[in-house]
Amino acid sequence: MRIGFGYDIHRLVPGRRLILCGVAFESPVGLLGHSDADAPVHALCDALLGAAALGDIGHLFPDTDPRWEGADSLDLLAQVCARIREAGYEVGNADVTILAEAPKIAPHVPEMRRRVAAAMNTDVSAVSIKATTMEKLGPIGAREGIAAQAVALLTPRP
Ligand code: MG
Image (cartoon, rainbow, N blue to C red):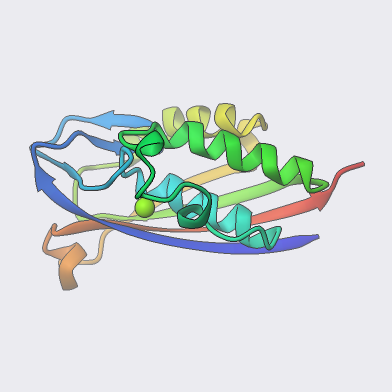
């Protein structure tokens, strides 16, 4: 078995859609980035790539490449999982934590898990998504950005 860890953070700005784990939120601000800036999915991609020692998301999908401008991060996640399988691994399970002061994430978790699991071509039971605030501490607590952490376990393909 192989384990990997991922982290990502994006700045919150007006005039952008807020997409977290493939779900669009009603929000006056959204995450700034070259793709749709879905920080938890980026963290998950890095956890999966890290577990397989296949580099990182910035290496695979550079923000200097116009192909990834406005990209749906769930599509990037699907490509990452394809690479993982080509390398001889299967996704065991993944656990994602979103660090955000707002919006309320818990009501959307079931839909997030469904979307992420579908992109990964894995069972919903293999995907955990949860959220915590920063108790108003630091830049995330001040709603300047949203961060995410993820761990993923890979098993050898049978
Ligand atoms: Mg990112």
